[in-house]
Image 1 (cartoon, rainbow, N blue to C red):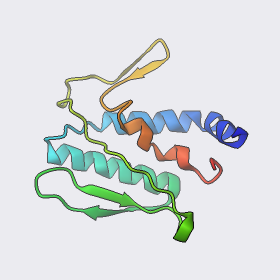
Image 2 (spheres, helix red, strand yellow):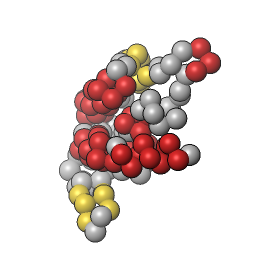
Image 3 (cartoon, rainbow, N blue to C red):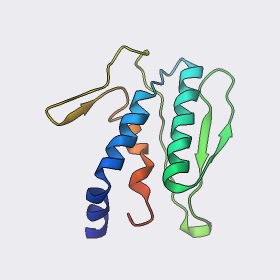
Image 4 (cartoon, one colour):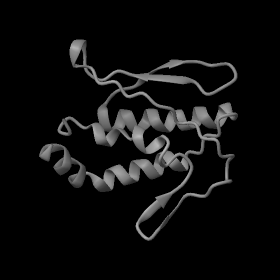
Length: 123
C-alpha cells in the first residue's frame, strides 16, 4: 500500500493535469461528435502514459466504445467506465475553488479513468 500512496503523491501533478485535460473535453451523452472527441483525448492519454491504444467499437448514434488492454494472459488490468456526461457543452464550467476541482464528469467518471494512476509502479 505504501508503494501506491508514494506513487500517487509523486505523480499528483500529472494526475491532476490529465484529469483537467479529460474534463475539459466535454462529452454530453447525446452528442456523438463530442463524445468521440473526448474518446480521442482519452486515447491520447492512455498512449502517453501507458503506451497503449484502444480497440474502437464504432457506434452509429452514440459515442464509440473503447477497449484498452494492459498486460496479457492472467496479468491483465481491466478498467471499466464511461466518459460521457449528462451536461450539455458549456452548461457546467470547469473550475477550481479552495483546493477543490469542479467540472462535468469529475467524480463520475472521468477522474476514475485517469490512466496516470495506473503506471507500472502503482501496483
